[in-house]
Length: 312
Ligand SMILES: Cc1ncc(COP(=O)(O)O)c(C=O)c1O
Image (cartoon, helix red, strand yellow):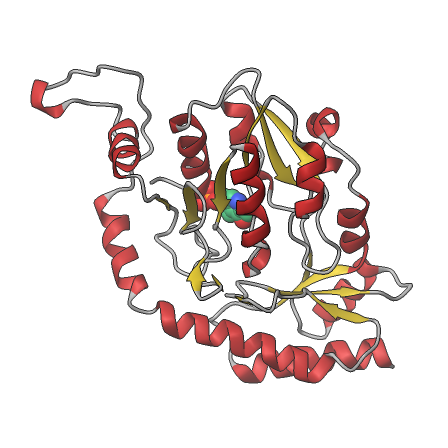
């Protein structure tokens, strides 16, 4: 697949979701979770996240269900698994599809099972900044072989090669190139090593920072093991976050604010339910350097610089 965005688009399209349908999505995510819902002409219904895990709150999902709801897109934000038991139970009760946005959580598990294997589809990204990369790219996983085959056909312009340039239905140019796929296979061999590094980085940040009472790490469910694509924290202290980020940069530590709640986007205002938790987390949320290109030394130094500024 050409990207994670294309994967989400194809999952929705394959399920026949479109006009007059509603799809429940979280208030805190990268914008590419939401746009594909609009691409297929459906209505995104943005619900709030849990303030501890930063992931979609199953109780909020329940409140948002209507007779038009067709699917839920849980996002395992920054590599932290959603409460998949609760989400799958709701989906079963209300007969809804689940499309997991796994673009940030390759390798994360819930009850020992990989994220992306619970829902009807799992949508992954191999963008340049992701855990493994093909430069740009994506993948869909599904247990439904017929759907998987149909998506493979759709992304290749829906071409029936046995009949030459014959296209029995409308298709898309969303396939991954062979060169990208080759790169992806080589990257897969390094996945375990990358995951180990990401988890080690988070542990170092926790060891150095978690005794500060105003620092909160994204909470992980007991049953979950995050991939920690990015280690992010919420700083519950009255301060100017942008000035903090500037000071950190001056001292050699590259950090950035977490995603702006999607409820804030002008074109999504009409689709948003109450998003106070997302705004609260956003107010103090920053992502710490987590690239696997970093060394343990850099991560330790960053944590100590941050500690020095906050505790000083
Ligand atoms: C939560 C989320 N959803 C979707 C995407 C889209 O993936 P891509 O950039 O490969 O289209 C990304 C990453 O970029 C993401 O972080």
